[in-house]
Length: 251
Image (cartoon, rainbow, N blue to C red; front, top):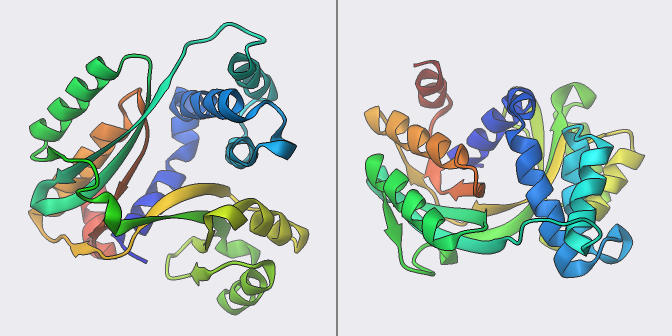
């Protein structure tokens, strides 16, 4: 895939540290709450909740945290009311960004996101300025230790996946139609391939190459956005080589 996919893998490697800080659990709790609020607390009849619960279990989110978040969504427990907002923007060099937000104060959050973008050489964009270049897909991450490349491709196709990227060192990345994520992940698990993570993502249709000093600038902005408490996900269409990505992360 693209550098965007490599960024997903880097984030996955950092997942344990993120979980310890509570950031990833906080993000998932918000998503579980809003999914339960909009579609009910029973995952069997709520595909959105079913999908986010799969992600929550893949990062070992405590069961009590999950149950509390569901009850806040269904009104069984008091909770904060969140608004879902999607911002679009540009990173340095014209890289397209989609920033998904869950916030209890839209005015505060938009000002803070605009400030972060500006401080790191980016800018806000109008609605649909970049969204046309992305499509929602399911993304399942399987450790390379589980099976070789040929076996992964064969099993993914049998499970109903659309594509497999085995170019990374540590993980196979299985792409599905957004509506097939849960079914494909369940089928792969039935074949003995348990997902390290399984979630919906936005994959760019076309990518833009980033090289040299610009790599560090783009990645710093990505990290700054993802560290914001109201940011659920950031998607980008950059393409960065393995070497430049590694050098930037080490630097």
